[in-house]
Length: 340
Image (cartoon, rainbow, N blue to C red; front, side, top):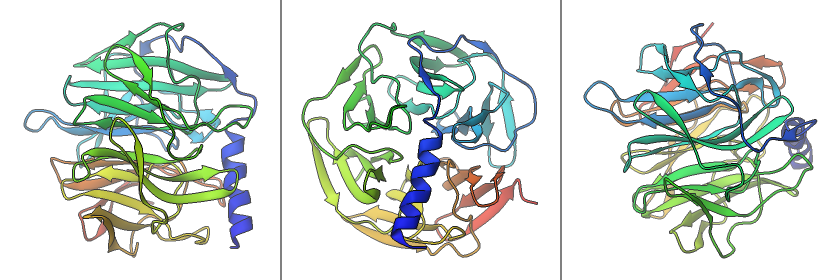
């Protein structure tokens, strides 16, 4: 596939999620969790939540059949413990896809921002400590706005959730950096990476900073790596090994892992895995026997089990949504659930 055709294909996928979407100031009403089984989905929020012995888990919230198409019916918080999915009870933010989520380890809170459903794009902030969700802030307080395809990560050193970039329904892309300190949103000053959508972010202990990789802009796919130290952005690598759309970075105990296809790969490309460590990328897997290229997947690193967890996504070529759960142990992929 040529670079021009690939860029056009990704633009169609991203643009489809912007069609006929309106802005909502306050977000959805809280509602009870559904009890149905985990279903195939893409554009879901996914992260790791540490806990006491045996209580750590990977969390998935929301999603859709395809990004911008048919939000899933359940409003549950789903947890993956390495063998099965479970739906957690409680009162949750309204159904949505494309939300941003990160776990604040200092305050022990799961932070959720924004997302969308049908013709509505949210700009609400929710936190969950224990089993209860609580909406934070007001609709007229400063916040990142009604973003789509933005990225977020938690800054372990500074105790902040960092949000960068994203787009709007009229096709604009943004280069703003926002931080949530547990009570207020603040827009950081200064310039850094160019405006983009579909990028991925994670905490890098080695760099003592949040790092961001890839995404897309008007010219096409990006594969640059940046770090944010709370004051300024610094480019670490102008051209990394993979082309990505959506979640692709995870913070592991050995470094930052990147999942994605090599640039200009075909529609059924294998997904490689690389580690960012000591200022360079080290290949861990060429993708043999692992998941294939898709969009809207979720990734998280289960620190208790030392596994990268890869879930869901949408295959545009076959119009199919996945419920596959793949795990990567640092050397090999394994399909552990959702296979045919």
